[in-house]
Image 1 (spheres, rainbow, N blue to C red):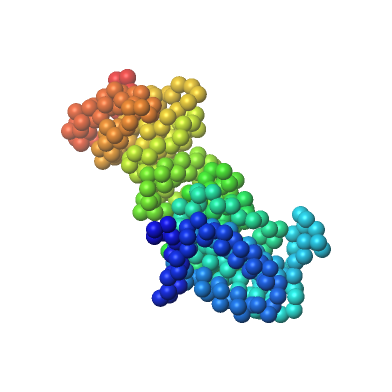
Image 2 (image 1 turned 30 degrees about the vertical axis):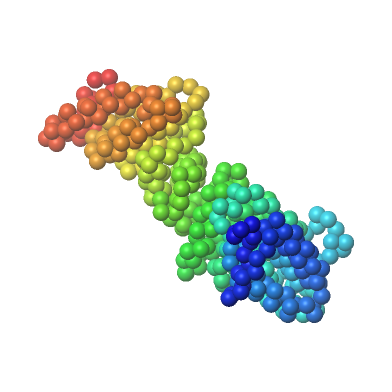
Length: 392
């Protein structure tokens, strides 16, 4: 943007458009493109036009839904789909990659397909995920999705994942997750751009569309190995605390989610992110299971979540929470500073257990520090000593 104008940079050339007219110009151009797509004699010109768009730096967001329409129209032309023939609500059913039954030779159109998709999504800002862009739904999007996922080019796959990230109404989350799970079976890892776009899409789609994905989402998360380095702001951390807490409260998450995500959740909690309010019954059940299994690393992460949470609907059994916390501290004294820091940094206005029961927590820490020398010389397993349990 410069002086009320928008720059169209094409290689060495820069064209200035009045900022209030660019959208109208692109809209008219887009309609013209849609008009000529069915005419095979224009495929060469369309290819050059798409190449021109691809070298346009900082393409405006308004171009994304337009390019998606071109992509859909080109795909339709490859297959020769006619709405007046198949009828509304009747998606085409037969396809085989790009070799679809259509109007004669589909090869010229096949070369236009992914460039059109790239024009709309190759340079998309991840902030556009929540910017309200809406795409035009088509009856054959499932086929377009599968066709893009069949590509060997991770940039093409990242483009179609961007479609899902921008507008989930167009791309069913279940279909996208299933196709991504298939990709995890290949030998090479995701490209950095593809991985980043998947992480952004998952973040933006939770919990509305992903809760039903179940074990498939868990397996995809395990493959992605998301960590704090993938979080670009505080809002991202809040999303992932909510997402991971939700996944770990599910049977699939407790059984299949990698241990690293328990630690990741604890790390996010210790950095100040908080899960949304919820009932305490399930969290107490998970805490008791980890306590009985003596899985101290997961228990630390989960107790950070428990102490840092805001619970609604009933009284939290604090004696159980205190007992589990003491067991953890006795077995793993290095946990104490992390809990104390979290307690000290908890906002007073947020009614977490740290805020509501800070005195009890401080008493636990004081008792631990006072008895540390005794614990080091005690031959009996310290978490079995009754004098360290709540009420003693």
